[in-house]
Length: 92
Image (spheres, rainbow, N blue to C red):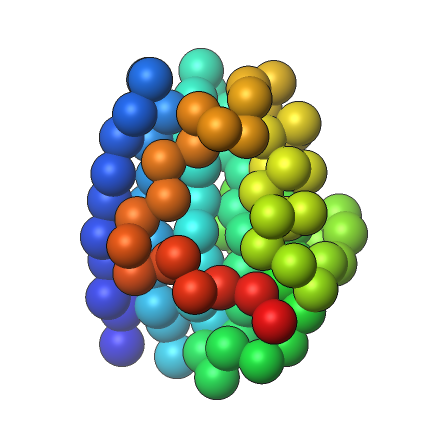
């Protein structure tokens, strides 16, 4: 099962997808990626990775903190990250 939506703002692409085990929000800019992932039930901590299948770098309870880390990995401002509506409720 995969449900994918996308959004783009200020040259930053955002892709939200649901797989059998995870909800993933992946940002891409300038050839770099950062992914915020959570289990499909939506109650676990958020994992930040350097891409959808990359190794976990850090875990966060709050979506804001995970987005901040993703923005830092990409070298962009967190306010510039386009968050698709389907991903807006990620975090605990």
